[in-house]
Length: 215
Image (cartoon, rainbow, N blue to C red; front, side, top):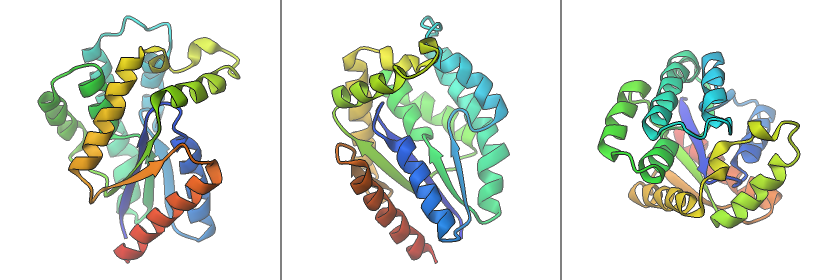
């Protein structure tokens, strides 16, 4: 069985916590699984991520931002995602191409048609079979993210996207909702305002139902 499952959502939606919890559960069930993330799922991607997320890089133009994300994805697909899928593992990925359409196309205002063509080229048209969308009001998510960042030793290393204006984050959220509405067979909506344990059970249910259908 091959399954590529992605976790998407606005800042502070809790998807990174939930992907780890799901990964632990699948491992306990002896289901072969690989956890990864974008853009930092490879050593090259981590270097790209240092550029993309550092708050000192506020002057990064949207086109450069897009191409850096896509460069990381090209490496990620070839080095990590495809080999894992080909070996029969379930791949859980924290952000993937939907994030590019939400953040760079909708958030930054870049041409969606160009983003789609460039993403297809860089990703080798590898697409997720299931996507969990963690949704909550952007104000709530940013408040959560702010509390998390306050615990960092170096605040400058906190995600620069969190410093964007509220209308940027609202465009991102709406783009995610539009993507979900356009592909209801792929997306599963998660109310990220619930408590962590409730969400973990819902995530587990969606993913185990999907896995059982593939067997």
